[in-house]
Length: 231
Image 1 (tube, rainbow, N blue to C red):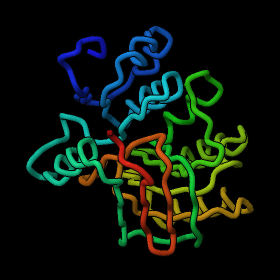
Image 2: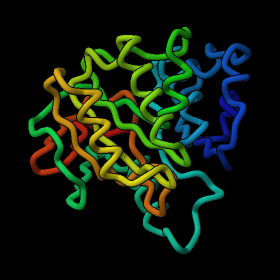
Image 3: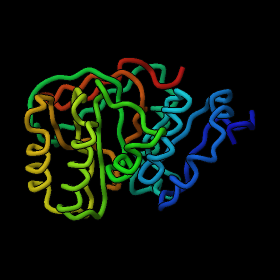
């Protein structure tokens, strides 16, 4: 699909599991020579990160074909805007909660928390130093979230972050417990921390470009990209 010049964008149909099996067999040079829009989330996080790391191509964390229904028409409209607008994106998530105040600048990175954890230590994981990271998850107990976050912390992946945003944590546990866990894990890092970014397995899943410079204002709960995602 990357080699086919008639194809302008690739939208993943669904997530599931198994994308990490593909990483070592992909011809990244073909992707680098034929850059195009690539969209997905959840398990597709592994592909988003690997393509970004191996080729420098901006990838899109966003809704997949299976999830685009009349119940969440706004996701499709947002995705079209994200991949076609010549203006930088700006997302406001006023229903979120500011856990640590402040502002941050850095490349936007993120995706499914468990997939990010499993990429640590591989050659397919981009550096998070100086980045604004967002994470989302589905169906994980609090003790498993604790384990994953501590894995990121102990592996040094959190130490260089400029900011952290929580997306959706569907069917995980009560959100107050997750907020307390995040504050505890990130204590001492002195970076802005905010919840409520409308991405993930919930009804609202906005498309965001990974690898572009962004600005986070935890006080006003806004995330602003510094340049257009597609030129």
